[in-house]
Length: 432
Image (tube, helix red, strand yellow):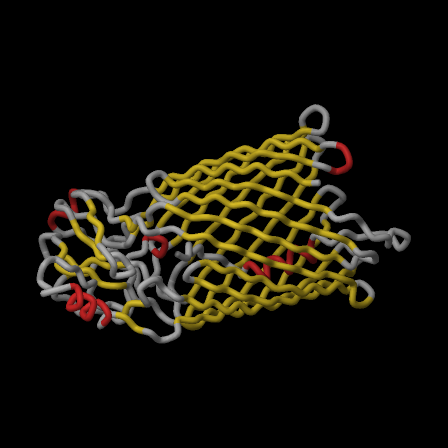
């Protein structure tokens, strides 16, 4: 299943921008081709009692001469565990139909409903080509592909960067297009249709299957995303570099998560129905990004801030800081702290009240609700001979959903409807 992560710009456009900003300025006599350079990493991400991810990454880079640079990347990851379905906890046990329609699973009293069918293997490929086009102008173009069991994504990108002011100022612009095709397990449900549960009212399996299929739609579930990125990078001094970016993104098509649910409760807080969520079919996002890097005698400080807003009424603030401290020899320590805060989407509702007017769009996905999150971690690295480097990183992540002023009727007042998500991140990397 697709693990959705809200991003301010697409992966493809970010790759293009990074390729431009990381292109080294070389003297005219340094046009010889470089050897291949490889970056490898193994990453583990594990939430307590929820999603577990293991990922392997290989990135290859080569300068073929005169700053004609190729970057290629392959990543393979596996996801297992349980994901919050969106339904609310209840004081009694609950039964849910699996997304495929084959079988059911039960949730204990007082527990957050988790769908334990969350598992997949994903393969991601990307390639980027960067080269000078005219004097002081660099161009980059590339593409990316991602495939998992029920999700396919294909994207292309292109960008330009212009250096001036004795190459102390760089203005860049990029455009990316992403096409995604979703093929949900059991077909996509009709938005806000009731979950069909086989609790003994069907005469046989064929009757249940017929009722289940009546809530499914076989239409193509595709979406397209166009991203625009504008940026300015300025050398402030021989020790300080500053960057400003503005991004604009429009997504159009199937933006609903076919596996998320929504509870309908009565005035006593007891569940009367389970609906499949339904989101708007268009989303426009904007973000403003600032980053400063400062190199001192003791290390390198990296501080950034991002403000993002969209027409779903989600506003977010991200503060990220790293400080790479030089140790004796060629080793270093890098503490990391990140803080994130967002408001809720205008159609986010943790539950619906029985008898109220059914909205046209609604979702109980906590990732669309009000929340705060922080990451704290430490990285240790050592630079070896011939430019080789190894590093290990360990981080702790906590996500804390909030109640956006929703009144909790009856039994819901005694239940934890907004449990925090705790996770550990560990990574080992080697470059050669």
